[in-house]
Length: 258
Image 1 (cartoon, one colour):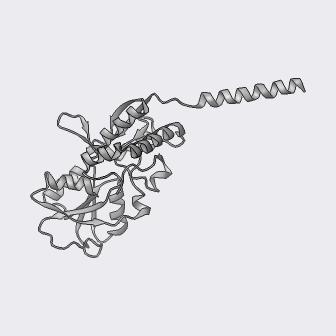
Image 2 (cartoon, one colour):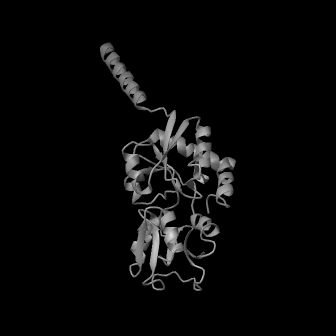
Image 3 (spheres, rainbow, N blue to C red):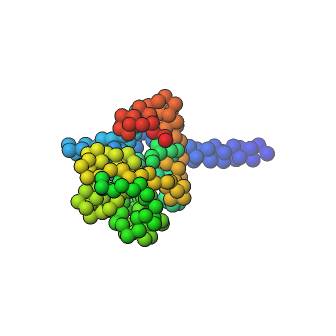
């Protein structure tokens, strides 16, 4: 019996030691972002990252006391690059949709944004229903909730995908599109900037939970429990201490959760 107790105790110690060895201590986090979606994340004229998510995540890194390294990645390859270990987390205005949750895990939502359509200033109607826009050319960034929404509901229109939101904006500006759809804050940045003479926000798009999800979260490879716990705690703390809304007010002009 004594020998049995010794063997059992040794086995428990071995199992506990193995479990501890498998627990990863995060001292550095590599963050993937697009760098082409102002005011969330953008490369400025000096090729420096700036925007709501950049300031916010840098703040979270300070809260977590970890070193953070930013990696710029084109949007259409942003999840594949995460899965191939190019970085550890995506912070890029990514909505936590049911479809994406099949491939990656998400943190809790840190922002939610209205969605809208923009068109020429000459448009007088605010009707953006599929029937009203039948035959129209509507642009959106490819591999996004916005393109998925157009493909699901606007079958009578021509939905045109673009590698970046900026390219869709420019085609609207140059008359090659009738409408574009995106997050409201991103469109507000456009109509106050390059699109101020041509374009206006026509109407908001009603969110579809199955396509749009509950809001924006940070994406991770499946099973990264320690990283998820760290990030979720930091997000919760930022909501409690008001720092999340501080960054949102600076860059978005409103509170983070609408």
